[in-house]
Length: 347
Ligand code: SAM
Ligand code: DTB
Ligand code: SF4
Image (cartoon, rainbow, N blue to C red; front, side, top):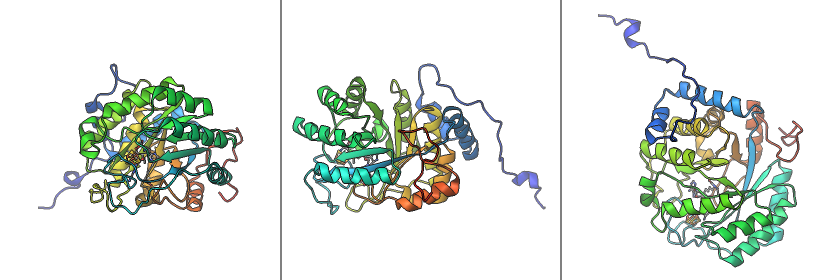
């Protein structure tokens, strides 16, 4: 018997729901999971609605990364090519000199970046490391760039010293849900991360905090990560969402890659639950492809890592990114001026 069209009809549209407000008592993991489980296009539509309400200029922030102290890290984060204990081919190096950092920062600014993030493969910096970082931060700030650093665990007095040097943002990721954390790293506790975030906030430095997906986590762990971030009081100023870069030699190198549509869902839910945060489409863009990146922008991502390298792994070519944004009719964000011609001349 021929089947009717109705029996095979796929439900494409569900009833629109009003954009989510912060539920009383914060976001439960279940509420975040319910969002993640929504039909993809409904979810992206809702995220785009929230995004437009909070980010009317629709700009994309261009943030450039530089590893100022590479490799030899004593921690055992299962995703990280810079952990000394994993055989990844990354050699421990000395900290970069001010001149070299300035050259990189100048080049990033000339290419259109507005934020410059310096990373160091430390568990926690020593006070003498903070002194050197203060020099780097002041020099980069002097170029008119927004400054960001990611140096591991910070004590309160160290966060204050970085603030005094001109640090705008400190990146310290929660990475995943508390329940999955010990499967990924065993040399520190989730609570250690939360304490550093408190020290950063108390020093008046803006918080950049996100996580990684595609590490073999269950969907509930993705919901748990987003709920943790959204419930930080207040939620982070910027939220990097990384898709695992699978580096041979790391314990997570053979993780099942995340379905790209599930990655888009995570971006959308970050946007809905943290409407005013800069949501950064971070590591892993090389594997995503341009069409999925476009969906991520639709879902509310409004920042990217910009430049040919992340810390030690690759990133899309800067010129290709400029062209992608231009093809999508998106523009880079000029933090220091209000003019609207914000991409490099080639865009
Ligand atoms: N050592 C400091 C720390 O861990 O806080 C700062 C540098 S660390 C490389 C900064 C962040 O990069 C990590 O928290 C993690 O979220 C991200 N990351 C590291 N390796 C990654 C990978 N292979 N793929 C995606 N993200 C990664
Ligand atoms: C973040 O969330 N992602 C960046 C930055 N913060 C420091 C790091 C990504 C690292 C990707 C692998 C690598 O190149 O080391
Ligand atoms: Fe070290 Fe940071 Fe890499 Fe962990 S993520 S091993 S703390 S550099």
